[in-house]
Length: 222
Image (cartoon, rainbow, N blue to C red; front, side):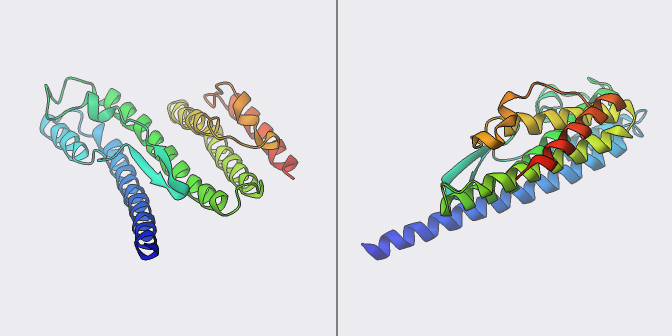
């Protein structure tokens, strides 16, 4: 019986690890292909055949899973990606049903979702693995909180010097990260995200406000 239990634990652990790695690789590949699409779609604006090829190539990369099992038998739900719903090359599709500008923006927002999913997937897996070993130790939360603040700071700094359109996408990514963080049961000293409202990086002033706030927050981490 002990051997059977051990075999089950090993098999289950291996399955979770394989699923996590597979999802991570899939998201990295998807992020790369969104970038290829974004860089090419406007250039193809007067070539219907090229638009169709780009749409179809990206459609082939639609993720196969929506939930991923992480360490500690925790589930992480990936963001749904709107491109594959609105640019459905297997449905009532035509290359010109949507402008290339709208397709580019749609792909940019989806890529932001993929980036957030990747960040959370990697760091949540580490957090859950640490909590499985030391459930009452708040050090793991502090490390996760600091990584999250540094990530948000990098987005705000990038938005500070980006054109308005890019800053809007970074603002979306920024708020998606906060949305994910607000669902995590941080200890009281790291529970700031539960009280957050939606914030903007659309203007240099807004981005600088977030840079100042996060820098102060990082300085206060004990």
